[in-house]
Length: 279
Figure 1: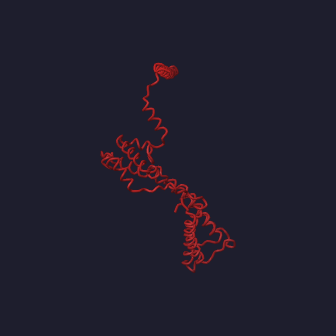
Figure 2: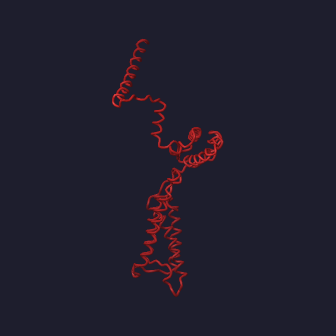
Figure 3: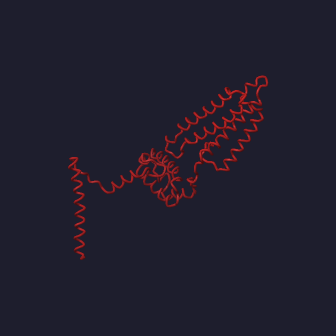
């Protein structure tokens, strides 16, 4: 094929593509009665990229990012690129960018620029990389039964120990004034405490979430509810379960049991490397 033939073929292809584009625009015009707008390619790419990306930078929402000046946005993007090149992962960058966002937003109120606060993007990135932040993405939540065991042992043991001390220091003339737990109540104490700690662990606040979305309200609501349930079960079982099937033991029994189960909690936590619990 000669050069002239190749040129004619390319021209034919270009004309064909142009004809297709024109036909599409004519179809839009015919169906809507309006002329199809000419959208620059760069603008289309920016809209697509923004739509596909849930966040502009790790830990930041688009609404927050757009509250910065264009220069501050460019500054953070440049820092982000250098941090990525330096091997820093998103899990580490999230709290850093959240702190930088808050600082830059405060600086904007008094006319401070990103460079005035942090220096050049390169200086800022190098300063961060020198701190050798650790990645915590490998830390995973333990199975539910381990978290329940951990929470039940620590919370149940503390309450059992307190009950033992209360019984030991009770007025001999009025022994009913002291707290007491029979065998069934004692078992319920550990079981319900473990379940309460498991449910509470599932709504722990997210410290890396944006301000107002950390989940404090839900955490305090759920934890308070389960603490009330736990105390109610222990109190009601002690009051209404007959002593025949719910015998009470000497004070020293509860003190020793509380101390032993408290120590057992640390053994199991180390043995199974339990993570994700409340404590």
